[in-house]
Length: 200
Image 1: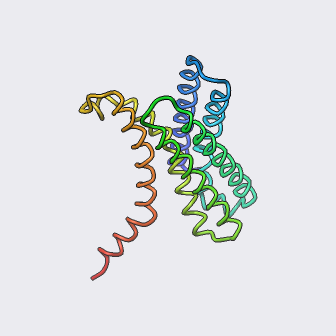
Image 2: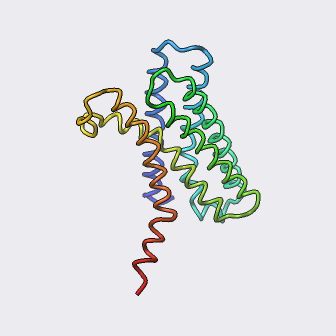
Image 3: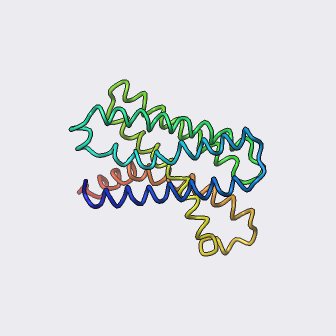
């Protein structure tokens, strides 16, 4: 394992652990119906391991040397992503705070759709589509970490917004939109731009 990958995995582990600790701690102090608490804890518990599994899955050396491990981890990753996506939709539909219900429901729906397409593509042995949809699924998975990063830097990033409710909604939408745009830029926009500028 090279140093860059080791640092990436360490950073993702810290981010996932931080998210898990903060959200469970905050949720534990709030009064929520038992069913919603189970959805909340289940969503976080399912989402956090995805950040650790996904980078390993993109290693060509692992796929070539340990294809069985790659397939097993892939099933775990996609299964957890589908579960976390379903719970995200349930949480979005039952949120009391206005402003982030729709982005959370869209987040869950896109996560389910991308993960399901990655699974179907693998079953059909369309490895190009499988890789592309897995990248999209992983991008969506980073949304919950990005949300907390935006929250930590709220005063600097959103100090120009006077209303706390507007800041809250802006964080919710940006945490969904930025990862989707980043994935599409990597998969299609940047390669297309390079072809355009390479033409004489």
